[in-house]
Length: 196
Image 1 (cartoon, rainbow, N blue to C red):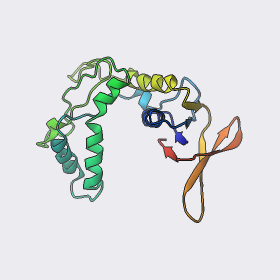
Image 2: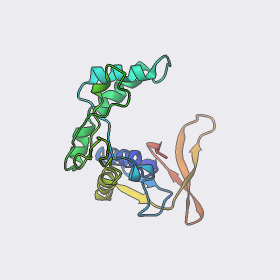
Image 3: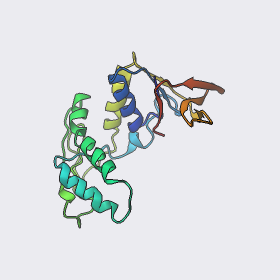
Image 4: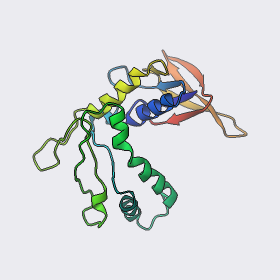
């Protein structure tokens, strides 16, 4: 039903969400098994969250400045979904979604609305403390992909190379990947999601 390109954090989240809604998912990952994840596997492992949607919207608008994008509507959707991150990671089995203060832009009066969290306890954000990077958030996401193997199939060492698009309607119908050195065309009935 759905083809996801990339098995980093966004690819895992997309595959899990689609599978939980009943879709059969194929993930195309260019890395070999055991080396997927890219930056998601080595980054600080913090997730964005807020418990104050109106103030967080004001914070995002402040960061947008005088630019026109993202639109107010997109910011609204983004922040409303971000406010559900902790609950979703707890649903996935996070052992301790500990939020903390980490002001990126302390000069903004709305900065206190941004409350990132970890998925397995507090790593600390004070000088001299560990800032994460242990891969635990990514490991949690990947474990949830593996647990849904009945609906999520992952092809490793299968880089997507081209979208298959109708030249007249511009509708994307699938993707072409390299599998064992050969081009393989995959039809996606409901969409291709690029998380690469």
